[in-house]
Image 1: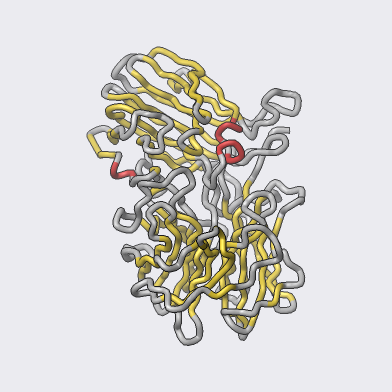
Image 2 (image 1 turned 90 degrees about the vertical axis):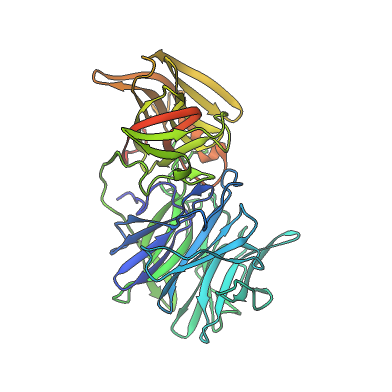
Length: 491
């Protein structure tokens, strides 16, 4: 069976904790608000979104975030009757964000900031005497400082100790993403190394103290797909969790690249899971946990928990009005980081986004994007609808059609597989098609090679989102629909 993600689409850097019979998982959200999507499950296979941890402006400021800036690599843990989440906000200068809640479905506290803990990928662990230990990938004046650890006061965020170095891995670049566990009499340090691209890997070491020294596992790497023939690549950044029956599992992220060399991934880093066996005192990943395949359709869910906006909360752009939602423009440049855009993740290889809009008081429409400078747009402007491709600084009209001014327009962007090895689209992960939908079928206005809305072209750490946008005035959004299904790659 082909491995499938347990949480598909742009959901990287998973961290998981179990309390009772329920598992809770969080992910990086980067420049999007609300931040740190929160998922829950009872079997580690089927997950539902329970909301966001950083769900209100007093907890999250990403107004200065550029593409893939903002919130990175959270950790979620449960200690002394409370849930705790720590992450890094690279956009506001305050470094670590520590928040907690008795009920993860309720409101999480306003953040405590650890301004003296300078780095990324913070982890939470409590020593035998109750001291909070934060392990992370440190930054210094000269750049990365390797994996380090400090004791921290969770009430004030003040560092209680100087940095002490930890195990630095097996020699792979960018040792990061540490997670520290007490298992029996030993402390295990799980890390990511090799970079988050094709060389990504998970390695582990153990010792008698949470400060080390640490003995590396003789069969490292624990998990990697570098150089392996697999539909899932870039596997890394993992977290371990124990089930109520004593068995263990691991969650980690990976990508599903498609097209010809060097291949391109468009959905971002997705979350996968696998069984874990303990052999000679070391965890060893086993069979992957794969959810059942099936099409998904979400109708009129704007602005539900799946919807986010770059640099601001959706509620700052959307207003409920009679007959729909009013989206108000923020910046007239369609390639601006501050463009008014509200969207949801593309979570399937075969996807269709549809929106019914009216642009009588502005200019805007539907977009499928990976960042501010790489997207395919449908733009309603007076009596014209245009399909427009944005690739870096280049913006090109791919086709257009006349519409009745001031009337509702049904816009659709869908993905199609590449057309085979002997086609000009063979290099592409997919083809993006933009057009109008109506009772008599769809009218295509333009196509864009999916490579131009991929991570390998755009760079960064995120994945595609589809949603509505407005560059001038206001756009009335009547309804939105997302349909997705996983399809095999083109032959």
